[in-house]
Length: 605
Image (cartoon, rainbow, N blue to C red):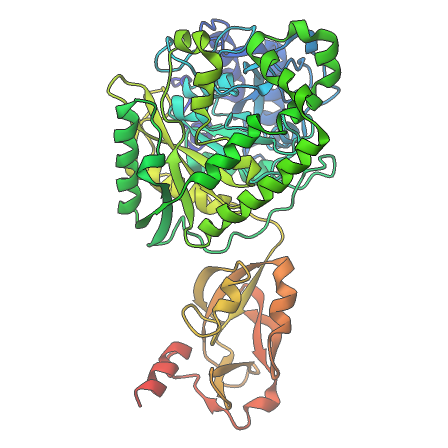
C-alpha cells in the first residue's frame, strides 16, 4: 500500500484508486488516526470511524465509473449542516443536530465524496483571522505562531496539511479567500447563489456564499460542476448564465489593479514585492495592466461593517443573541451589538448608496476583464491579533469586503512566499457568472508559478488539464458566414455573452452559396441529397445563454433560418440554413475554401 497522507489533488487520488494502491476504506481509516492529534485546532467534531467506513464501503460498492468524486475526502465548515454531527457555528450554546445535510454537502456525497467532519471557524463566521473561537485559535499551516485566516480557518488548514482533498467554507466578507492566501491554497468564492446555502447558518443571508478550498484551480472547477445548481429551498439560489468572452484562455486580456497610492500593505514590504511579481506574471500570460481608481470598491467595503448590513448579522442570530449574548465571545459580541443602533431608514439609505457605488464599479469593468488585488495586504501573528482584534481584522478586509456587496465572483490564488516562509496570495475578481474564466486564469497562474501544493510539499502537477465548467441553461449554435469570428455580424453573438467553442466543418453533404444583396455579404448553407455532390463546409460552434437565443433567432432575416446541421464528427446542432428557393440567383462557393476565403477573393479579384 502506497503512502496515504498528505493527500494531493483529486486527480492524483483517483489515479491511485484506479491503480489499486489503496481503497477508500483504508484512506478514511488513516485520516481518522491522523486527525485525532489536532494541535492546530482544525477540527470541532469528526465522524466516528465506523461512520467513515460506512461511507467508504458504499462508494466501493457503487464503483468508480459512476462516481466522479469516488472516495474523495472533504471537510465542512461548522456552520454548514452534516447529518450525524452537531452544527455549532463555533458557539457550543448555539449547537443543534440537523435532520439532514446541507444541499451542497448532499450533492457532494451523492457524487462519492466522503465527509470527514466539521472544522473550526471564527464564531458565527464573524472575522477574517481564525482566532475568535472557543475551540482554540486555528494555527497557520506554515507557522503555528501566525493566524490561519478566517472565518473558514479549519477548512483551509485541513486542506493545506493534506488531511482532505478539498473543503467547504463560507464567504461573506472574505472568509473563503483570506485563509487560502495564508495557507497557499485556491480559495474560490462563486457567484452568489451558484452554490446553495440551504442548511447553512447565515451571517448576512443576502450576501453569503458557500466557498471552496482546494489545492488546485482544476479541482475547484471539478467540484463546482458537481455541487452547483439551482435549489428552490434557497431563496437566494440563482441559475447559472454564460460568461461571454473567456479571458481565462485568451492570448490577450486586460486586468485592473488599484492605483499605487491606493494599494495597502500595512508596512509589509514582502507583500508589496510579491504583488508586483504577480502583476508581472499576469503580463507574461498576455495580460494588459490598467490602473483604476479603487475608491468605489473601498467605499463599498466600508458599508459591510460600517453600514446597515451589520444588522443582517444580528438578524441571523437575533433570538439567540438576546437570550445568550453572554455565550458569544467578546469581539464578535461587540461587532454584532452595534446593529441595534441601525434603523430601517439607515438600511434604505445604505441600499441607495450601494446602488450608486455599484454603477461606478461596473463602469470600470466595461474596460477590463478582471480585477487583480492582493488577497490580504499582510499577515499577523496570533498574539498580535488577540491584542488588537478589531483594527487588525479590519486591515485584513481591505481587499475583500466589497466583493459580495457588489455581486462579484472571485478566486484567491497562491502567489509566492515571504522570505520568512509565510505564503502570499492574490485575488482575481470579475462580475457574476464569469467564474469559469476566473478559474481558468487561476489555473494558468498556478501552472506558471508551479508552487508546491498547500503545506504538503507535493509538487504542483504541471500536466494537470483544466476540466472546464459544465454550465446549464446554455445552447450551442453553428454559424457559417458573417457571424464568424471577426466578421461584421459576430458582435450579435458577443453582445449576447456568446463564446466560441470550436472551429470545425459540416459533414460532407452540404453546399454553400453567396446570396445576392447589400453588404454585409450573407451565406446560404444548403444540405443536399445523399446522391448529389456535397462537400464539408467550414463553420464555427458558438455557445449562448438560452435566454439570449430568442432575440438572436429573431434577428435572422429571410431566407435564412435555424435548422439542424450535422458536423463532420456526427454531432447535430442548430445552425444557419437557407431556404432552397433563394439559391437560384446565388453564387455557388462550395469549393472556394470557405466563407473567409471567398471574402478575400472578393476583396482581391
